[in-house]
Amino acid sequence: MDASERQKKLEEVSQLRARLAELEHELQSTASSWQARDFYLTYYATAGFFLGMLGAIASLLANVVGSTLIGQHPLRLIQVYLTFPLGEQANPLNAPAAQMDQGLTLALGCCLYIGTGMLLGVPFYVLLVWFTDKAGLAQRFTVASLLAISMWLVHFYVILNFVQPALFGGNWIVEQIPWWVGALTHLIYGWTLVLAYPLGLYVPYRRPTEVPA
Image (tube, rainbow, N blue to C red):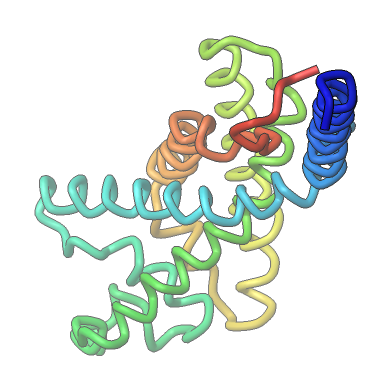
Protein backbone atom coordinates (compact mmCIF):
# COMPACT_ATOMS: atom_id res chain seq x y z
CA MET A 1 0.00 0.00 0.00
CA ASP A 2 1.57 3.25 -1.11
CA ALA A 3 1.40 6.54 0.82
CA SER A 4 -1.43 8.07 -1.24
CA GLU A 5 -3.68 5.05 -0.80
CA ARG A 6 -2.97 4.98 2.93
CA GLN A 7 -3.82 8.66 3.23
CA LYS A 8 -7.09 8.09 1.36
CA LYS A 9 -8.11 5.32 3.75
CA LEU A 10 -7.23 7.45 6.78
CA GLU A 11 -9.43 10.25 5.45
CA GLU A 12 -12.26 7.76 4.89
CA VAL A 13 -11.91 6.48 8.47
CA SER A 14 -11.96 10.07 9.75
CA GLN A 15 -15.15 10.78 7.79
CA LEU A 16 -16.80 7.62 9.12
CA ARG A 17 -15.91 8.57 12.69
CA ALA A 18 -17.32 12.04 12.19
CA ARG A 19 -20.54 10.57 10.76
CA LEU A 20 -20.77 8.12 13.68
CA ALA A 21 -20.40 10.94 16.18
CA GLU A 22 -23.10 12.91 14.35
CA LEU A 23 -25.50 9.95 14.43
CA GLU A 24 -24.89 9.36 18.15
CA HIS A 25 -25.59 13.02 18.88
CA GLU A 26 -28.84 12.86 16.87
CA LEU A 27 -29.94 9.77 18.78
CA GLN A 28 -29.24 11.41 22.14
CA SER A 29 -31.07 14.57 21.13
CA THR A 30 -34.09 12.57 19.95
CA ALA A 31 -34.21 10.51 23.16
CA SER A 32 -34.10 13.50 25.50
CA SER A 33 -35.63 16.30 23.45
CA TRP A 34 -39.16 16.07 24.91
CA GLN A 35 -40.06 18.49 27.62
CA ALA A 36 -43.21 20.28 28.66
CA ARG A 37 -43.64 23.48 26.70
CA ASP A 38 -46.70 24.75 28.56
CA PHE A 39 -47.90 24.50 32.15
CA TYR A 40 -47.24 20.88 33.19
CA LEU A 41 -50.50 20.28 35.04
CA THR A 42 -50.06 16.54 35.58
CA TYR A 43 -46.61 16.97 37.07
CA TYR A 44 -47.63 19.75 39.46
CA ALA A 45 -50.74 17.86 40.53
CA THR A 46 -48.58 14.87 41.43
CA ALA A 47 -46.08 17.08 43.24
CA GLY A 48 -48.91 18.78 45.12
CA PHE A 49 -50.20 15.40 46.27
CA PHE A 50 -46.85 14.70 47.96
CA LEU A 51 -46.26 18.23 49.27
CA GLY A 52 -49.79 18.25 50.68
CA MET A 53 -48.68 15.44 52.98
CA LEU A 54 -45.88 17.66 54.31
CA GLY A 55 -48.32 20.51 54.87
CA ALA A 56 -50.76 18.29 56.74
CA ILE A 57 -48.03 16.87 58.98
CA ALA A 58 -46.70 20.35 59.78
CA SER A 59 -50.15 21.71 60.66
CA LEU A 60 -50.93 18.63 62.77
CA LEU A 61 -47.65 18.94 64.69
CA ALA A 62 -48.37 22.61 65.34
CA ASN A 63 -51.76 21.68 66.80
CA VAL A 64 -50.19 18.95 68.94
CA VAL A 65 -47.73 21.46 70.42
CA GLY A 66 -50.42 24.10 70.92
CA SER A 67 -52.88 21.71 72.56
CA THR A 68 -50.20 20.40 74.89
CA LEU A 69 -49.20 23.92 75.97
CA ILE A 70 -52.76 24.81 77.01
CA GLY A 71 -53.36 21.51 78.79
CA GLN A 72 -55.62 19.82 76.24
CA HIS A 73 -55.26 16.37 74.74
CA PRO A 74 -52.39 16.58 72.20
CA LEU A 75 -54.66 15.23 69.47
CA ARG A 76 -57.68 17.33 70.39
CA LEU A 77 -57.96 18.49 66.77
CA ILE A 78 -58.18 14.89 65.56
CA GLN A 79 -60.76 14.07 68.23
CA VAL A 80 -63.01 16.84 66.98
CA TYR A 81 -62.44 16.05 63.30
CA LEU A 82 -63.42 12.44 63.93
CA THR A 83 -66.96 13.62 64.60
CA PHE A 84 -67.34 13.92 60.85
CA PRO A 85 -67.01 10.21 60.02
CA LEU A 86 -68.10 8.92 63.46
CA GLY A 87 -70.72 11.44 64.52
CA GLU A 88 -71.82 12.16 68.12
CA GLN A 89 -69.95 9.20 69.62
CA ALA A 90 -66.62 10.82 68.75
CA ASN A 91 -67.49 14.16 70.37
CA PRO A 92 -64.70 14.76 72.95
CA LEU A 93 -67.10 16.77 75.14
CA ASN A 94 -69.28 13.74 75.72
CA ALA A 95 -68.82 11.20 78.51
CA PRO A 96 -67.73 8.40 76.14
CA ALA A 97 -64.94 10.65 74.89
CA ALA A 98 -62.47 8.53 76.86
CA GLN A 99 -62.88 6.00 74.09
CA MET A 100 -61.11 8.46 71.79
CA ASP A 101 -57.90 7.87 73.71
CA GLN A 102 -57.65 4.52 72.04
CA GLY A 103 -54.48 4.55 69.98
CA LEU A 104 -55.91 2.87 66.91
CA THR A 105 -58.81 5.31 66.57
CA LEU A 106 -56.57 8.34 66.87
CA ALA A 107 -54.01 6.82 64.51
CA LEU A 108 -56.71 6.31 61.90
CA GLY A 109 -57.83 9.89 62.48
CA CYS A 110 -54.29 11.14 61.87
CA CYS A 111 -54.11 9.10 58.66
CA LEU A 112 -57.44 10.56 57.54
CA TYR A 113 -56.20 14.07 58.32
CA ILE A 114 -52.95 13.59 56.39
CA GLY A 115 -54.76 11.90 53.50
CA THR A 116 -57.13 14.86 53.26
CA GLY A 117 -54.12 17.18 53.21
CA MET A 118 -52.61 15.21 50.34
CA LEU A 119 -55.79 15.52 48.27
CA LEU A 120 -56.07 19.24 48.98
CA GLY A 121 -52.42 19.68 48.05
CA VAL A 122 -53.25 18.95 44.42
CA PRO A 123 -55.35 22.07 43.70
CA PHE A 124 -53.44 24.17 46.24
CA TYR A 125 -50.00 23.59 44.74
CA VAL A 126 -51.25 23.80 41.15
CA LEU A 127 -52.78 27.22 41.87
CA LEU A 128 -49.70 28.32 43.82
CA VAL A 129 -47.41 27.52 40.90
CA TRP A 130 -49.84 29.01 38.40
CA PHE A 131 -50.03 32.37 40.21
CA THR A 132 -46.46 32.65 41.54
CA ASP A 133 -44.27 30.92 38.97
CA LYS A 134 -42.14 34.04 38.43
CA ALA A 135 -42.85 35.69 41.79
CA GLY A 136 -40.61 36.24 44.78
CA LEU A 137 -40.87 34.62 48.19
CA ALA A 138 -42.89 37.43 49.78
CA GLN A 139 -45.50 37.38 47.00
CA ARG A 140 -45.65 33.59 47.17
CA PHE A 141 -46.37 33.73 50.91
CA THR A 142 -49.10 36.29 50.27
CA VAL A 143 -50.79 34.17 47.61
CA ALA A 144 -50.48 31.03 49.75
CA SER A 145 -52.03 32.86 52.71
CA LEU A 146 -54.99 33.99 50.59
CA LEU A 147 -55.47 30.47 49.25
CA ALA A 148 -55.26 28.99 52.76
CA ILE A 149 -57.79 31.44 54.21
CA SER A 150 -60.13 30.81 51.29
CA MET A 151 -59.78 27.07 51.82
CA TRP A 152 -60.57 27.48 55.53
CA LEU A 153 -63.69 29.56 54.84
CA VAL A 154 -64.97 27.04 52.31
CA HIS A 155 -64.22 24.05 54.55
CA PHE A 156 -65.69 25.42 57.75
CA TYR A 157 -68.48 27.73 56.72
CA VAL A 158 -69.63 26.29 53.41
CA ILE A 159 -69.00 22.54 53.48
CA LEU A 160 -68.83 21.45 57.15
CA ASN A 161 -71.38 24.00 58.32
CA PHE A 162 -74.03 22.36 56.15
CA VAL A 163 -72.83 18.82 55.47
CA GLN A 164 -72.09 17.66 59.03
CA PRO A 165 -75.48 18.72 60.49
CA ALA A 166 -77.24 17.13 57.52
CA LEU A 167 -75.39 13.82 57.86
CA PHE A 168 -74.79 13.52 61.60
CA GLY A 169 -77.18 15.95 63.28
CA GLY A 170 -74.53 18.18 64.82
CA ASN A 171 -72.05 20.89 63.90
CA TRP A 172 -69.25 19.95 66.29
CA ILE A 173 -66.23 20.85 64.16
CA VAL A 174 -67.31 24.44 63.51
CA GLU A 175 -68.58 24.88 67.08
CA GLN A 176 -65.69 23.31 68.99
CA ILE A 177 -62.69 24.45 66.97
CA PRO A 178 -62.08 28.18 67.55
CA TRP A 179 -62.07 30.17 64.33
CA TRP A 180 -58.50 31.32 64.85
CA VAL A 181 -57.31 27.74 65.35
CA GLY A 182 -58.94 26.68 62.11
CA ALA A 183 -57.52 29.65 60.24
CA LEU A 184 -54.01 29.22 61.68
CA THR A 185 -54.06 25.49 60.91
CA HIS A 186 -54.79 26.21 57.26
CA LEU A 187 -52.19 29.00 57.16
CA ILE A 188 -49.48 26.68 58.48
CA TYR A 189 -50.50 24.20 55.81
CA GLY A 190 -50.14 26.82 53.09
CA TRP A 191 -46.87 28.24 54.43
CA THR A 192 -45.38 24.76 54.53
CA LEU A 193 -46.15 24.32 50.84
CA VAL A 194 -44.41 27.63 50.16
CA LEU A 195 -41.28 26.47 51.98
CA ALA A 196 -41.41 23.14 50.13
CA TYR A 197 -42.23 24.88 46.84
CA PRO A 198 -38.83 24.26 45.16
CA LEU A 199 -39.13 20.51 45.76
CA GLY A 200 -42.04 20.27 43.32
CA LEU A 201 -40.75 22.40 40.46
CA TYR A 202 -40.47 20.80 37.04
CA VAL A 203 -36.91 20.71 35.69
CA PRO A 204 -36.44 19.03 32.26
CA TYR A 205 -33.97 16.15 32.37
CA ARG A 206 -30.80 16.45 30.33
CA ARG A 207 -28.27 13.73 29.71
CA PRO A 208 -24.77 14.47 31.07
CA THR A 209 -23.43 14.72 27.50
CA GLU A 210 -26.25 16.89 26.22
CA VAL A 211 -25.44 20.52 25.53
CA PRO A 212 -28.38 22.94 26.00
CA ALA A 213 -29.43 24.64 22.77
